[in-house]
Image 1 (cartoon, rainbow, N blue to C red):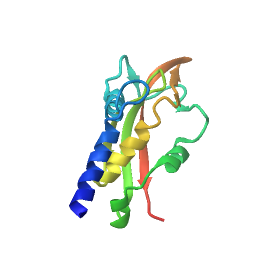
Image 2 (image 1 turned 120 degrees about the horizontal axis):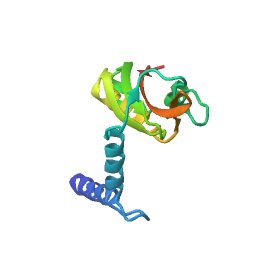
Image 3 (image 1 turned 30 degrees about the horizontal axis):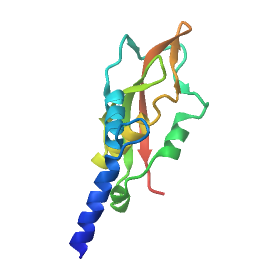
Image 4 (image 1 turned 60 degrees about the vertical axis):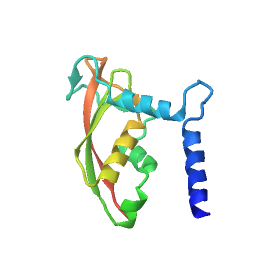
Length: 148
């Protein structure tokens, strides 16, 4: 009976991933497109130093935004794994997040969550500027996982 329940649950879950939304694409296709978008190369020069750093459009401090949107992986929490994941990424001149990369990780599930939360901020950025013009800007941030 347990085996049948598990099998039925797996079938229903996989059907949900491949169900179509109003745009005609499946959830799995949309998730892959988002991943491809975030990992795609940046066209043009990427600057490390700019006149005005990128910031979130709504004015929220990025560290506060991360803390609000971070989902601590359950197994890591249960195993009391904590630490700082250093993530590098580019905010494009259009405010999109690209080339997200973990430079110093802690543990795989924490590293993946750090990449997910940074990637989720794509489109929420006001780009950095150089001489008053929006430019691609490379940022380096710590994502801290601490069990309270």
